[in-house]
Structures are given as C-alpha cells and as structure tokens.
Image 1: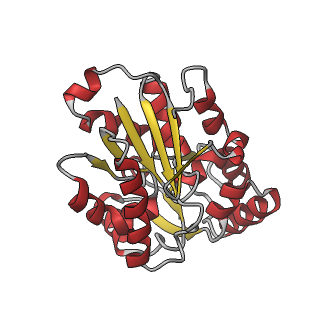
Image 2: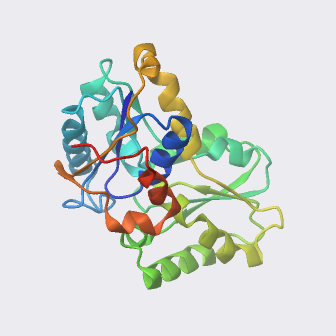
Length: 262
C-alpha cells in the first residue's frame, strides 16, 4: 500500500514514523512545500491553494490514502482537499487531542500555531470535548518554524515564551501542531517546574496513523509494499531533508526497509 502525507515542512514526520511502525512495508510519500513555507501567516485561501498543490503532486504517484499531517492545513484546507480527492482517495485530517487530554479535568493547555489558536475550528473542539476541564489556548509563534530549521536558539526562545503563557498547575498539554511532537521532551522540561506532578502531553500522530489505516481501502491494506520513501518538495522529487535526521521521527524513516524510491 502507499500512503501520502502532506505538510508545509517536516511536521509530517511524527505521523510518518507512526505509520512506519504500524506498517513497515507501506510505501510513504512525503509532500511538503519548502518554497511556500511557513503556511501559518498565509490567508486561508492562499494556504488552501498551497495545500492543494502539494496534494496534487502526491496524487500523481497514486497513493491509497492522503494524510493531512498539519493542524493548520486541517483547519483551513481539509474541506477543499476532500472535495477534490474523495471518494477516490480518503483524506485524513489531524485533530488536536483535546478529548483525551480533557478527560481528567483540571487545567489543560493547547499549544498551537497562531493560525490555529483562537480559530472557530479549535474553539468548536474545545466546546465539544473540553468537558469540565479548564482549557487555555496558548499560541506559539515561531515554534514550528524553529523546528523546521532545528534552530536551537529559536527553539529555546519559542518554548520558553509559550511555557510562560501556560497556566501554573497545568495537568495536560495538547500538542496542537504536528511539529511540536518532535520537541516534546523540551516542552515538558520547560513547563514541568510550574506544572502538576502528573503532567501529560498529548500528540496526534498515533491516532492519525491508526485512522489512516482504518480508512484505507481493503485492497490496499492487503497489498504488501516495499517500504519505500519518496519525498516531494514543492512538487519536485528530492531527498529527505537533512534537518529531518535531527529528530528521532526522521531517523525512523531511514531504516533499511525505507529505501528511497525513484
């Protein structure tokens, strides 16, 4: 089977690594947009056009499923992607893990990009799944970009700034941007001094990977792939970006089973 994953940058790595763990034989197509990133400052219409262009490049390789491995693109472009590609290709969005995080009540923070923070989409999820939890939205300007560049100084500054805006006593943090899962340990360390002792962080990668396999056509699930990896950078074939190997999720895609595809 073949699964495509879409993001502006390397935020698709956590979901790709989760899929690799569940189906080592799956052929993965990573389609991102280094020429157009970051997407967060773009208007919803402009962002949607960039997401559609990345999706169309991946569709040329005939994937069985497309994963929108980006919270911001899921907020603004998911409907357009589904309108164009479904039912031929199932399109899986990325939803912040508010429901499981809020289940225990108490203080819950959602770290997300400025484009997602305060959006009607995220507010709707909070209203629907927040329950008795006290949910605070924490915008994290610059954090996704710093992850994309593996910029140590920028990472430290962005995480510290978001930690300072996170309520004391927080019991759970929802990682509302796929990039943030790659620096989960750094986020935990920054928040821990003022957080509840049982602090939990909730990402989406595992749930998104499982949903992709649930939505995949039965014939695709039964088909064994070669575990190949194809990378499209603004529509052009290329290598896995060197910066991806700075993170364990990127290194997980460089296993012997994940030989590059031509």
